[in-house]
Image 1 (cartoon, rainbow, N blue to C red):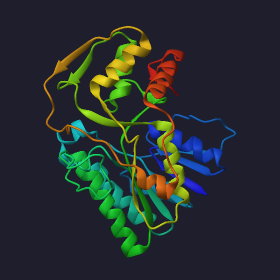
Image 2 (cartoon, rainbow, N blue to C red):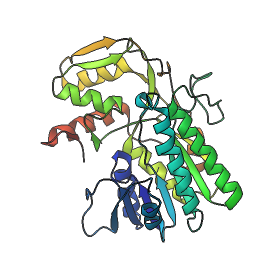
Image 3 (spheres, helix red, strand yellow):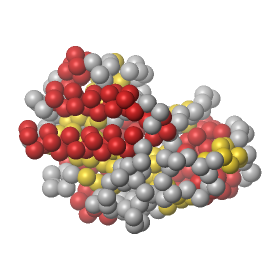
Image 4 (tube, rainbow, N blue to C red):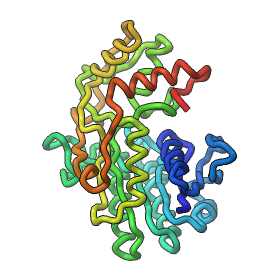
Length: 310
């Protein structure tokens, strides 16, 4: 099929693209960056454009069968700082894109947030039918788009899949970005800088290796069942302190850390129940926590620039 990846030069997008190419699909990467991450022999077309520009989006969508919607302008922390911008750039932009896609596209596969849409969990691990009460604008916007996807499906028959992904980490994650605790911690630890920890380090999250997550997105391409929303995570909870200890173990030395005041948008714990993805998509994560961090560290030291992997 001909697959358009909105945000295809990003961390997750590059891994999805690689797997799609390996399956023989044609890929169009739409991004603000002109970076070419794949060889000339690969069937990849690069389009540079603005997600909010309807002409750019119309050009990208033309002739495509499936859209992977990965573009996002905020992270949980800064989404609350400018909620109007969060809604305008993400929600309004997506509605505009769907209005164009509905004419020709078969399916939209959307990366939602397993870490924010549920809010403070009432039970763990969290199933897809858990109440959705986000406590940050980022989560509200992700959830809003989920609802609009269902609306376009109901009104126009535009098929969709929502993957509520937990915290991604692994090779290819740009160092110095605000999103991804493991990537940020590894970058600081490997450069002997101090790691800032918000709270007492007991906040618990579900971390999934990016190559495992990318497999789920390709499986969603072929899925024809009735389910529309899937959790994608490891199904295991790791505390912030667990991450630090794992890094210290693998580096063979202590790392610098500083504990700061807790943030009010951080839920205390988030662990996803991914049994539905196993049952319907035939997907399970394969890379364990220590193995994934070890691979990421190896990639970091193999590069001369400030990129974790490539």
